[in-house]
Length: 108
Length: 118
Image 1: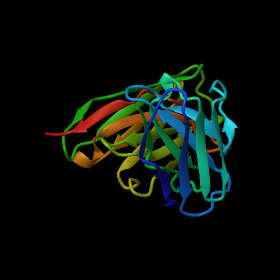
Image 2: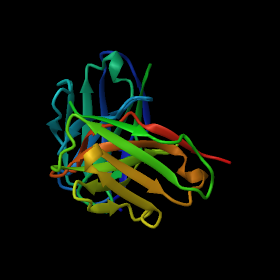
Image 3: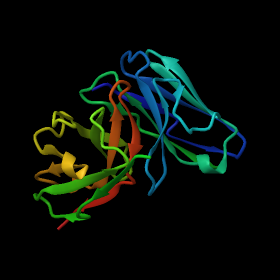
Image 4: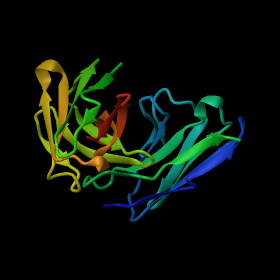
């Protein structure tokens, strides 16, 4: 399995802040990297696919970059609805696809 | 708009079989894979496996010996069976649609909590 490591595991931020989450793969996954937002009791939401492509309907304050083993997700101008847990997921190796451990973004 | 909804028992006894169904509305297309993903309490997301419209499957190696996925295209449904469950299988179970080319999950159900307990 390809190990995916996210950092930090949690962070506190205020509305309007710029937040960056990092995801590191255990081997090169080129740009087969996706990002999700998960809130309790709600359907998880795809934010970014193929490392940097914004999913339709997702606000442009979400941006992402990276290739190979190192990736970042940035939220520019944090909004109240952005407080959630964020996961990266590699889709380079199908056996199986693996997720990072998650980053919980909390209100400061 | 595609919508997915999980259904099934919320409580399963140890050693028994967990059975869940996902009903898809708004398009149960053969262009996608249909997946099950779970999240154990306090832990991250884990892919269980996927099934195609034609019934081809791919299972996580760690669960392969206990998992069976099936599809019923006439009902726009796909299903999960997990045998010999233990407390470690307690989790929120999600069904999701996989975009094959990118390997991303673009639509998800809200999830259903399944507790394994006697």
